[in-house]
Image (cartoon, rainbow, N blue to C red; front, top):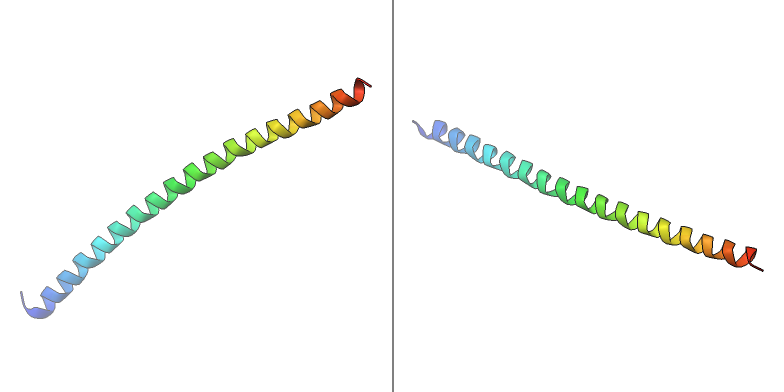
Length: 65
């Protein structure tokens, strides 16, 4: 293998490794985003429940008078 073939082989290897690392990073970011989204949805549901509870409490206090 001459020098230019060796260089292009190494460049190809480096490119392959970079692509692999890039896709691993994308997977990690994607799963982190998914779990964040799920946490936010749970938090949003809790907020909705609390808000509904507050609305119901106000309705009850209005109607009992």
